[in-house]
Length: 168
Image (tube, rainbow, N blue to C red; front, side, top):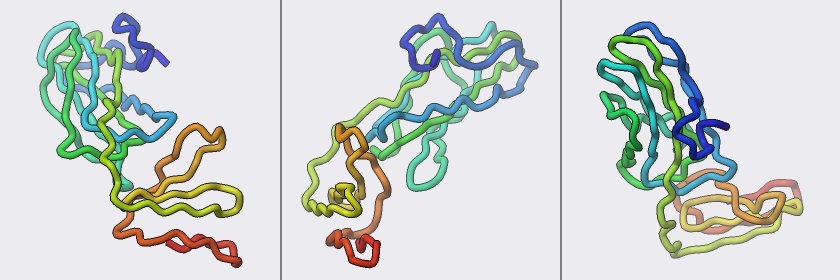
């Protein structure tokens, strides 16, 4: 919880690390999938060159956002090549001289969702499914937001069937 508490004084991951040794990945899973354009983080290390390895999960795989030297004790923002639906990120760091090396905060920055040109809806087994252009989503259990399911090529309709299948 320290990685998302907004307090840059509470370390979320890391410790007294050997020189040039990465911390374990700190993986952050969003309660809702965000349409993201960037990721920001706050890290610190005693001295030396600090390297960050930052990945975002989209299109069914981990994708490299940034790996390289970074500033410490300040917020740093890394921009995605293009906005994506991102349900989780992971980050790890290392210092060239070792010592106390910590990840304090990491956040997914939301982008403005483009206005879709096509919409499709279907009630399937009591759950509302929707497609917005090529994005498939379903209404969450609390009925407060849509949960991203997948990005698919060319969704033209959603058709529930009598044989317990949803045809896309």
